[in-house]
Length: 416
Image 1 (cartoon, helix red, strand yellow):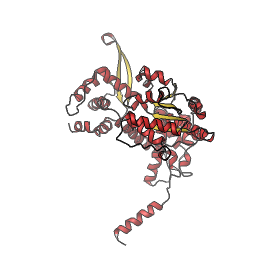
Image 2: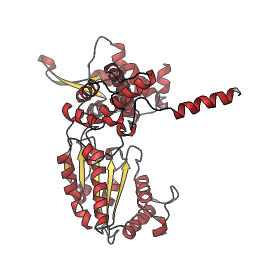
Image 3: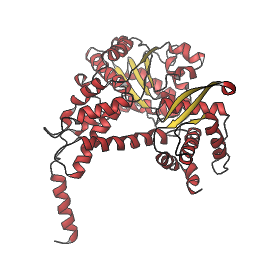
Image 4: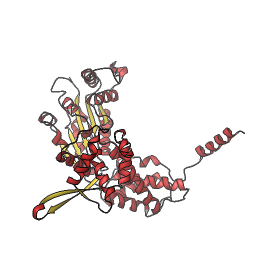
């Protein structure tokens, strides 16, 4: 047997081996929409969203709905679960209901949203309509989309997740006024818009607010008890007896400290199992959880920061440079950060505008809400009386800079 055969044989042994840690690892996947008995601590939220779209099961117009809450509070999970359940019930009772989900972090333009909605809801063998990925004007894509809805459905529910990431909100106007404007003859459309930003609605103009006539729900963070129950309801992801008794309580405690983020809890639990497997351990232990938490923090932070606009990266980068230069301090005033931000944005290689201090401060406040930064307020005395905002990093400056340097516009800063 030559060397290639030997390696292939070794791989065959690997493929055929049994996983010593995980049994149903998919139960820990963030995007999994589990059965209802596995959805913990969101009974009232499920009921509220179901109430909004209830008319849809009879082919009537559902209420448009805005859902707010921090990352990992079950917003997308509940929206997907309720709409899937409604669709199944409606179809069994003679109502043709369509449902589509759009992740606006990946689909940011109006045209791309319409294309993806049309492709998701189309059945070309029935409609005779094609939806090419490029080549048509936005108006033509809309025309084909409306035709698909009228031909195939009595009602359609559209979930726009992380809607604040869209470049503009015109899609909300088009969807909410389609019937009134005569774009649709028979199909009714309902929107479920999801945002991490409670202030999202303030960005909408009066025309959209008037046509939406929405209901709003805020999803609170999970507490430690709910997080424990969520994980105990998915502990069959692991082999029997593999998890030490303290693994789930510790994972829940860590996630509760991070504002009740269920995504973080499942991330920690899955990563702990993977670390144990990589080490060849027989059990997942407390040490694996602690190491997994550190890994999850860095992974989550990287995902959050990498997707931010250039101006936000410049603002956060300025804070990271200050934190690096003044390691004895943790918090920095807006004025200090702005001075460093001005130095960074004046670099012609970046090619970005220098915002005013107020606008840069607004960018920092957005990152506080997303848990990329922390913030404290201090009241001065005497000549410095008044409230001053101080910001601090929630991750090591080196990690922050490494993530931002992945953006080609900032790569030159790494060399300076």
